[in-house]
Every structure is written in C-alpha cells, then in structure tokens.
Amino acid sequence: MIKAVIYDLDLMLHITPMKFSKYFSKEYGVEHDKVLEFFTDEFQDCVKGKADLKVEIQKYFKSWNWTKGVDELLRIWHEYGYLEVELIKIAENLKKQGIKCILSTNNEKYRMEYFNRVHNFDKIFDSILNSWEVGYKKPQKEMFDRILQVSNVDKNEILFCDDKPHFIIEAKKYGFLIHHYSDVESFKEELEKLGISTM
Image (cartoon, rainbow, N blue to C red; front, side, top):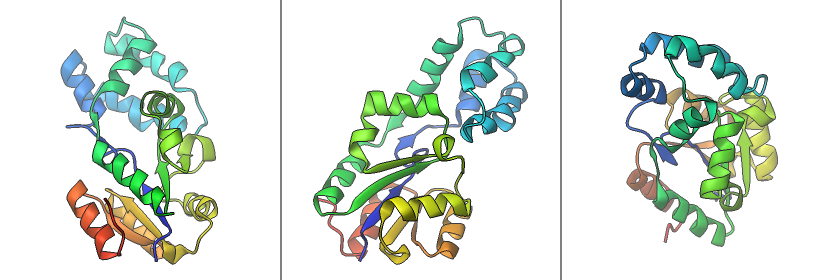
C-alpha cells in the first residue's frame, strides 16, 4: 500500500512552455548560448546550495545587456509558467487519506522561497526536500535516502513521480515504486490503479 507520494516541481507541479533560458533569450534578445553559460555553470552551484544565485547571476548582466536589476529578473523568472492546480487538490485529498505528500526538487533557494510565499507549498506538503538545502540532487542516492528518511515508511510504500526518465530509472533501482509523470490524467489513473482515490 502506498503511504507516501513524491511530487516533482518543474514540468509536474509547475508547467512552462519552454525552459526559462530559452524564454528569456527569445523575449529579451539575448543569445541563448550566453544564457546557457550561466545555467550550465554557476547555477548548478546555486542548486547545490554552494553559491547565492543573486550574486552569481549578476556577473552575466553585462553580456546579457540586462539593466533592470536582479530582483526584476527573478520576478520575471518566478512568474513564468503556471501552477498545475489540480495536482495540489490531489495532494490535499491524499493527505486526508493519511498519505504523505512530499516535494523533492532540484532548485535554488529564491525560487523555492517564491513558491512557498505565493503558493504556500510549505503548508501544502508534509515535507519539501530542496537540493539547495540538503546539498544533494535527484537522482543521487543521498537524496533518495533523505526521501526515505522523511517519509518514514518502507521503500515499496513510496510512489516516486518525476518527468525525467533517468530519475525514474534510478528511483526504481533504489526500490521505490515509480510513475513517469506526463500529465494529470495519467497520474490520476496510476493512483487509482494503486487503489488510491484522487477525489
């Protein structure tokens, strides 16, 4: 029986038509390679909690011709995309059934502070495992260990959900039950197959 469901943030709870790097490049006329340089380098340290994004991203403002400041850039970034509200409602229903709902995400602190402040993620989910806080990213074993620890149930009672195939593969190897997330309907069908009501 499933006793904990692990949610993912990007492309599950939060949907964007394209990656923010592409959106920013297209919307503000910045060469995509110049934007990618940040996301493949310094941003990865921010995601691991080893660097402060507000400090690191400003190093690129000159090459991006960005003059509106760091707070405005983060506002644009954080507000880009939309929340999959139905998944939040499902999480609330799961919790009423005694099933723990845990968010595990590879993200940096300012973005997660935004989701907690604006969307109350810290109140919706039983636990939030941010890579920037725990120091490990999915699909590292150490992150799976933390998921198991905070869930406080057996591995085979945890349903790990993610849109990234290699995360799913590693989670299955670890011993979790898995769901390769693609859309809300298939997620609901998976839960119902497991005997879990989404209503």
